[in-house]
Image (cartoon, rainbow, N blue to C red; front, side, top):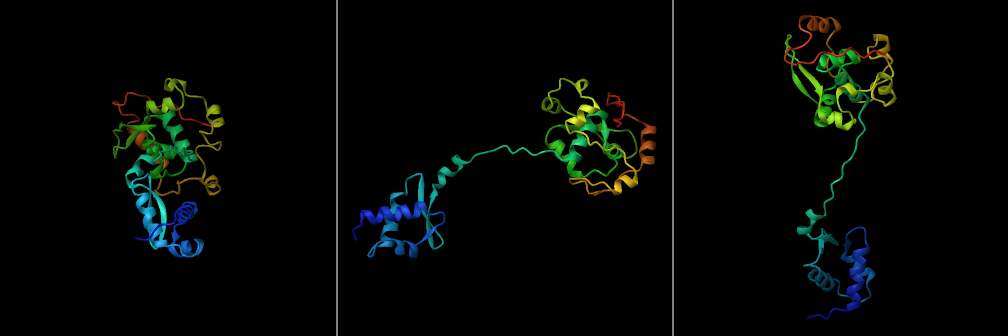
Length: 230
């Protein structure tokens, strides 16, 4: 059996440990003193680290220290990444809060642009809005309202504590432009998020007809708040 040179072993260990990338045997041979038995050194190091927190592993044709497989799951770190709401999401949330229960078509009518599918989904996944039932109108559209998580997020005891229009604008929850724009305004406006007019918005005439037939499902038990006007 070939005798292992302790100094060669320590140097090989240091070279592999200090390298940001896996180290090939050719590199080790070039950096170690003449006569160093690289395969024997690697075999010894691999055996030495076999039962430790890090193992010497072969990566392709190179070698590197890696966390022991059984310890990997214990080293995972979960971080909560905060993501700022898009302008469309903030506007939609404000409309739901002040007009609930409100349908998707009504949100689009107030905003003046078609609503992306992802906007309501994102607010729903955040736990800030929830379905409130269906309107007794053609198509039976789903109505949306806020949740207790919404109140908790914005430090509100109840919906009666919702801030006024000026406060909402100052907090960035409403855009300073008029909620309902003319076609000319829309030509010069652009949404900064996913509202790319994916779906055709319901017309004002259709919305008025639907609301005139039955403005609110009696089962909802909540009256529509006055529309937010600039």
